[in-house]
Amino acid sequence: MYALIISYIYGHALITFLGFITGEKDRIHFSLYVISGFAILTAITTCLAFIMKVGLVANILVLVLAMLYVFNKSGAIGKNLRAYKRAIQQASVFNYIILFAAIGMSLALSASPQAKFDDGLYYQQTIKWIESYPAITGLGNLHLKFSFNSGWHVLSALFSFSFLGLPFNDLNGLLFVVVVLFALEGLRNILKGNYAFSDVFKVVTIAPLHLLFSFIVSPSPDLVIPYITWVVFILFLQKIEQDRLQVFDVKYMLILIFSVFAVIIKLSAAPIALLSFYLLYLQLKQHHYKALLPIVGFVLLLVIPWMSRSAVLSGYLIYPFCELDVLSVDWKIPEQLVKVELTETRSFAKIRRMLFTDVDRLSIAEWLPYWFWELNTSERIIVMLIILLTAVIPVALVIRLRKERITLQTTGVLVLLLTIYAGIFFWFFTAPHFRYGMGFTVGLYLLCIGYLLYRLMKRFPAYTMPMLAVFLLLFFSKPFYNVAWWYKNYPGNYLLYPATVTHQGFTEVDHKGIKIWVPNSSAQCWDAPLPCAPFIVEGLELRTGELRGGFRINNPNADTYTRKRLKTMGQSGVLQNIINNN
Image (tube, rainbow, N blue to C red; front, top):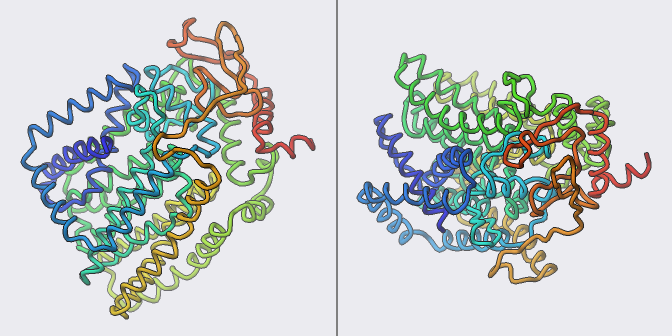
């Protein structure tokens, strides 16, 4: 609740300022205030993390600023709260059922034992470093995964409340509830009979919970990216429906800010920026050059702290892209090691049960069948639908455009579809692990499902309620079953006290005066004492003789690094059978 309130206040400050610079007073949903708060708090916390550990003092500073703003803007905030109260009173029983179900599921999963492999591999350790120290120079040399620099982990450190001694892990669950609230606005409009396609799309964004619910249990960016991507799609659709694509308004700026926010959380979201480029093109076409200042300003506000942190952690402005090698610093991760890590990431995304050194040598025709059959049933269905839609949608558009005049709204729809396809191609030809591309792959699937549902409800309005009930029941049943199964098989008081992850089987290794904890039989450090790494990188040393001075690598050896990387993957059970046979 604290994270929700603080994020709302910061989001209110941001959107109030956006209304001032655009001269537009759009009606903004509560959820958009919260997500805006996430974005601005990520930038603020990233700046604080350079000079202090993100703990009690950082939270006090954030709280004081929020209280000062509330004191200054109590009238405007009070007006919003009264509007929310009226909306709550007018909400249908259907809305309450869905909301309470979402809250219950979020709490249950957030408090349960964390089971995602990457959580133990580097999520928890990344957050623990942020909670324990100011940004450590060259931290990525200790464990290259620490250089991935997700803004979501910075924000997670702020709201983990490590100083309380409990492993709070509620941020992903909070985002899920916020997105459900946003979807319920669409449901309310549908039940009133006054709705647009964007309202139906809002509702269907909660449909793929069976694909995403497992990411609520950890601070995984793989839950965040799809939801923020779909929120951007909704805002863009609303501008199309309102015929305001060319208008510089609050929604325009939110599309920009959320798109940049998604990119600093995970680089796989980069194609979403195409929507912002298109809107910028429309402004420049109208000679609205004054819009450039706030646009550039907010991009820099989010990007500069993120790139600066990346430079401190890895020596690169955008890790792991060695092509942007513009810094000459002694803590820069050696390029040959970065390339090994990049190869492993891309290869693992193609085939998870084969040596990444072998996968890297395969042609697309060789790895594609393995990749497809490693997908689960739901993922295979979506992939096959995407292939079908890739053929059908262009034909349908050509037929429709031959009958209708091309308008700005039509162009907007084309740009949205091109952005989605660009995202799918970017995902498939870089790192095609299904979860990396869900914002675009599942997004296209949801757009089509939503459009079909929209047409059916318009054609048969008397059956709107039964269709929605069946639709939501169909997609909510499996996640509910999975949560119930989890608590039946792993009983515990998780709803009262968040589950802790115990670290065991570690050896403290003294390496050149650095005492490093190393797992005995896996690559996962979980919440082990700092510093911890899956293995000791050859050439690793302290820059200044103490931990706070950071790390660097002298005389790197890519072959040795690759062998150690493969060994720890085998110990973790990821490649055990393969390594035993080689």
